[in-house]
Image (cartoon, rainbow, N blue to C red):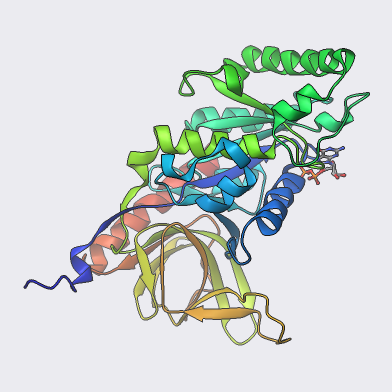
Length: 362
Ligand code: GDP
């Protein structure tokens, strides 16, 4: 046929890289995510960021707005970044995708005045083990004595605004971080000095509180993804969906539902899916795909909006019968062109892998 209406034949596309935030407790993971969401809301055109279930999508044009002159949208063809909303390495290590970490890229947050702490080292070990590329957010620079804040600006503007003494204090902290990273077998440098991001981690000095350095962080994440991950982001956008369960939750009117990050393909209502559960797999049919309701003036009791179809990368709540035994971290697969048996085998194999990992971690 001449007309290309057969979506099952598939079509190529680039998906959004999935970003996770890790680091020691109180070093600012939650604040950083809040600030990124906040600046995306104020600086972007209204409605430009989309709140997903369990994740926040920041499209390229919004990143470019926030980053000011640092990001030219014409230099990129990846659609933006999808931030997983639950920070921390516990969620990072339970969230896996076929053969690796669910997150494509990570932000390791370190408080500049606190330096390396036990969970910093744990997070680093996980990033090394999963070979996840990462950027170091050297957070809380505004706590350096004498700091002169340049709200929401690029780091260069902040550095230019400091006295020599304050610059020295910051540099001391940053070089001590580089030393600690080196003690942990990571070679790193200020991000603007890094040529080869595959072998060197870039440090981005920033403040989640004042927003300075956030433009740089988004620029580095976007640049890293574009440069080193583009091939992995090439997916068959209309192929059968693959995802990972973030959470299993009860929802009034829907029963047990799954919060899922979709990292490949498409999911539609009425799709048959196979989901990993404790010691078994669940085969069920999607009853509804739910997304957070976009805020409107009309007050409504409804928290969710239904959608018929979603493509990766996205966060979505799946309502379907028989989900009670599903577990966080388990795979979700849409059955479309393959047989149910082969999809079930795949899910079982991945579940076995998760079990092995869990044992190894004690
Ligand atoms: P998490 O445990 O890593 O998620 O850390 P939080 O985001 O909850 O931050 C812990 C505390 O540090 C909170 O009181 C934040 O307000 C504060 N904080 C986070 N980022 C900054 C920062 O850049 N500057 C300052 N001064 N405080 C910060």
